Image 1 (spheres, helix red, strand yellow):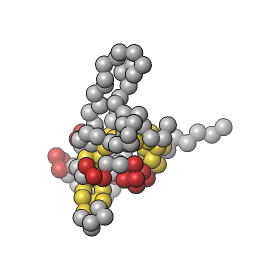
Image 2 (cartoon, helix red, strand yellow):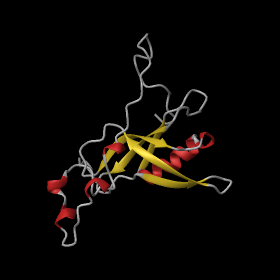
Image 3 (cartoon, rainbow, N blue to C red):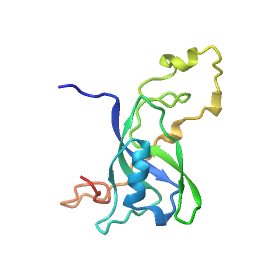
Length: 151
């Protein structure tokens, strides 16, 4: 049996999404733009509530992390949504790729390489805060709020 180590599952928080777009259809669309969509954290009525949309996706670790995406509403308005990732491992702030830090990145060995310093395109802001948990009082046993769509 072979195992593909190029893919990793993450919970991704989608920020700045209009409340009217916090649904399974948009979550699936965004999740598939990031990688492979698995699940949306939502309530039993099928609604996603809160400041961010929390989706479960599998991401190809050979590509840089996506920081943002432009989406268009049915009215034709464009919105720039931003992403943060839960439990994000080490990644190099210059290239945005997972699994290595600066001394192992081939990008810095390019002839025309210039270190952007504090203006790096990636940074610690891509790490999401973990969601709050409901008190443990029986059956919920401290699981995150919501039930999910595709288990």
